[in-house]
Amino acid sequence: MRLTCLLVLVGAIAIHAAPAANTAADEPLSIVVFSASVFGSIPGAAASDDQVSIVYPKVLSFADVQKDCISYNVLTRKPLTVHAIDNDPVISGEGNVISSAKTSVSFTANQIIQPGGSYFDVAPFILTYKRYKNIDIQFAPGANFKFTGLRTYRDRYLSVDLVPNASGSGSAYAYNIHIFDPSFTALNLPTRQATPEEVQLAKIREAERERNIKIFMGVLFAVFISLFIGYFAYRKALARSKNSKPASKLIHGR
Image (tube, rainbow, N blue to C red; front, side, top):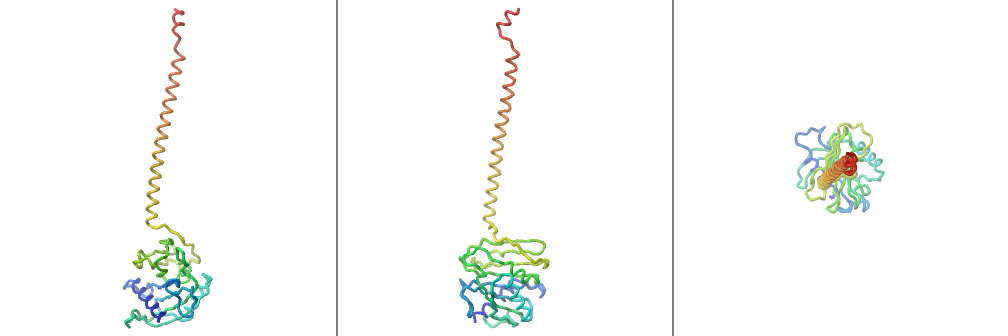
């Protein structure tokens, strides 16, 4: 029952994330990662094994799904256990069909979301599923997660964007990923990015620093000008004193 509910949730996220006009080719691959430390582990999994539930945008063979799981396993070096692969329509709790037949898979692996961590490792998912043009990944680490991770990234191959306030509660974080060119074989995504508040504070501090530098340079320039004027005034006064004769010499010289 828990597995069915989780797969229904993934399907609902897929429907929510994909615009109605999307074709099958553009419909996103949807991934949800549940933290075992918050939601608990599923039957047959270790207590620290997080659950990954994936809904593909179409029907795949079991062999293709298993290949994806192996690829993810190789990239993360985390042993994983596949618990279910289905090619059934996604059904809501009320028995309504949320979407037509699609392949879904659920597997567990140790601490995909690091307890006490501050970012999510999205690169292995992207590298595994880069053949899909659009990928939606949602992480559910719980409300106490202190997120400071990747917020936005873009290059010629892909873009990664954190959806602002994805859950409305701070307990879930969603990424929208668009693949422009799947020919990349490695990713070096930043694991730490400043929050908008930190960016704004940095701009204020930079503006203050520039203002202080300008004030310092202004004072330094004023001191230099004063010294320059004083020096030439002194030279001029010294020259006048050398050119003038003492009064006694002037009297005797008449």
